[in-house]
Length: 220
Image (tube, rainbow, N blue to C red; front, side):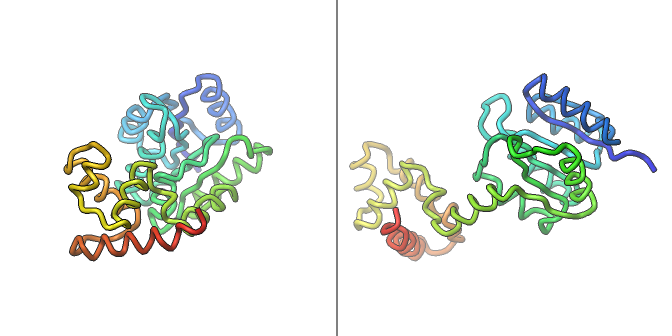
């Protein structure tokens, strides 16, 4: 039986080499070890691995490039086993990753909470076998975010939503914030997307967005 083939993405050279050695020690074959998200996508296309392990914050922007790449890979191939391994709970695309492929063969683990390398290797094999392994802290943060949908909004989007709740038109909001109406429209579109309000008559969506704002406002 051949070893499971792994593509590893981690921008820290020492950690990348250490993880590669650890994986080899537990019987995995690291077919590529790369340091940024574009190289990760290229390596997966070249090697067709069984498993992808990726950090979240990687070059060029050191924000959520690795997580976005993981979501893109799962969209292209929902059967590909993917594990996000990070120091951070990055919520922007975490739910998309964990919901992909019916939630099978996927994981989100926090580096600082991996205390037993044998258990870590066993978790990877569970994911390869069709399981889902998620650090409890990631689950806690996701549940908290879903209880308050406004947590997904940026400060400027919250400001726009508050002005909508006060009854202001797009033009009035633009004048208040000293931005263009097109910019306000983009913020409103983003608000609708983050509050999971599907395309419909815009007045109706504005009402639903305001209701979400008013429901969450007492707890904020």
